[in-house]
Image (cartoon, rainbow, N blue to C red; front, top):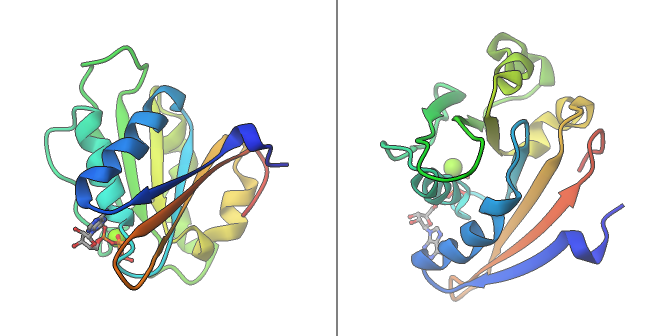
Length: 161
Ligand SMILES: Nc1ncnc2c1ncn2[C@@H]1O[C@H](COP(=O)(O)OP(=O)(O)OP(=O)(O)O)[C@@H](O)[C@H]1O
Ligand SMILES: [Mg+2]
């Protein structure tokens, strides 16, 4: 069940406003966590991953991994967090959960200090529900003026979307 303590909403008017979301989330990140990023095409899912990577000291800028499905980034130990790796998965082109199998995501996530950002979690709902890991959901919507509304919620292990 989602309690109010585990929910928060942000309104973003410009690109730099993502930093508010990142600042709020960084202290909450723990190894094994999955950050599920929902929202329409162009909502800002990859942009969130770019801001997160920067905050975690990743040297390169994540691009959409649409063609490779998975990209792995080394997190630099520039902070107190016990994090070492950021996995970026884009399930946009995935039609069946079993298409994820070759990626060995469970094993990848079990590597020490690993967290995962997942775009298009709706496409791999069954897989996601099976994961015993704690999940953070970010749902992004945009209004006509281009303002982004971000709803943050924490879902307990073994729960789906
Ligand atoms: N808060 C913001 N303010 C202004 N522009 C933004 C903001 N967030 C993202 N954008 C812009 O929106 C565009 C699309 O962003 P992005 O590629 O991250 O979307 P996406 O949700 O990953 O899309 P897709 O579904 O295609 O993967 C980019 O040009 C990005 O700079
Ligand atoms: Mg994207």
